[in-house]
Image 1 (cartoon, one colour):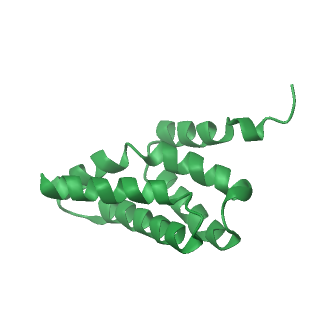
Image 2 (cartoon, rainbow, N blue to C red):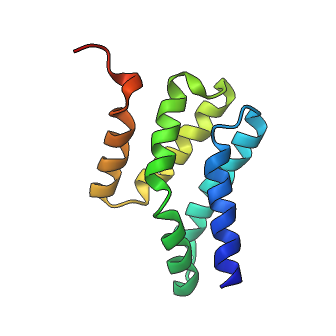
Length: 116
């Protein structure tokens, strides 16, 4: 249980750090989230996989949405490559339905509405 809370806090803190003004903090958060998702996919431990999946499933849509928005001007230019890699990792490890809702949600924000 303590491990669950620790990982949950680390993941949630990383999501909050994606919009940090200090691009090194945001970069570290992106790399941590990518590593966590890759570990979830690669682990052979069903207990660990289930624990990480339950944590990651809650933040996937938010991360994709935040990074799509950031790629359109909110992220430091050096973060674009790792951000794209994280988006790809999330979409690759998600169901087709979930992936579609993540990127559609990210593109249906006010900053993408050009006119009536």
